[in-house]
Amino acid sequence: MSINVEFINPFLGSLLNVLSTMAQTDANHKPPMLKKTNIARGDVTGIIGMVGNKVKGSLSITFSEAAILDITCNMLGEKITSIDETVTDMVGEITNMVTGGAKRILADAGHDFNMATPTVIAGKNHEIHHHCQGKVIQIPFSSKKGDFFVEVSFEDVV
Amino acid sequence: MSINVEFINPFLGSLLNVLSTMAQTDANHKPPMLKKTNIARGDVTGIIGMVGNKVKGSLSITFSEAAILDITCNMLGEKITSIDETVTDMVGEITNMVTGGAKRILADAGHDFNMATPTVIAGKNHEIHHHCQGKVIQIPFSSKKGDFFVEVSFEDVV
Image 1 (cartoon, rainbow over the protein chains, first blue to last red):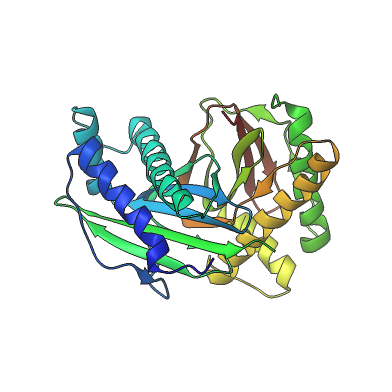
Image 2: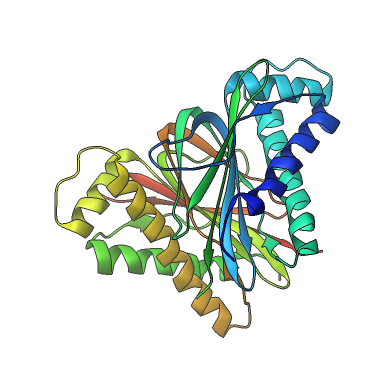
């Protein structure tokens, strides 16, 4: 499977859908782009591995503190002021929901993969590197409160 | 598959093997333990997803800066003074090798899984949370230069 923007759109649509239905958050995004030197940085990141018969890869969603605190407040209806376990749990859950939504759309198009379990990293301004033979596609998002990035990378199973 | 120390030993042995053969680094470790409140923190972390027919999960290896700079120097035979792309590439490769070694041993014992691609996080003193229904098993390591942690978590595929 060649990884192109067509393949990335299900992830983009799934995230917008999760944010609008679960967190009443409208987000703008730039077009998906090839990640070259533009290293995603943020304060909390959800990561999940994906494994199919033909491809394997990883997805990350990296939030600034301001963005994820706003999203978590909207989802839970309570004020959250720092990245605590409630927030890291929420990021794990968002990572699952976004990837699960994209998985269903891609399966309908004949691209099957299974999902591993998410891991969540919290720490001020960390960087994310996908260690993958394939291209890394990055989608920069912004909401009223802050920025976040989705990155997806796949390589062929050999 | 119930996740117990017996299941974790292949990951432990595989890491010790990679370190001693590739980096001439002997490391001590404490016994594997259930992660409860003991949150792993470090400066660079390799994460990989694992997916089998019966289980799915994630592995993380989290290094202090001092530990990974020493290991990378030993592996490459050149002095490295900060966590740069050489180091994050090395952490991705170590994550692949350790998980690949454990995968072979576990497959021989009838526990099959496939590996996703690794993601590497760099950032001072970040925390790692495995978002998994199953228990998280943590193994604390120490080398002459610094500490590192392996964490493995699996849950049943439903």
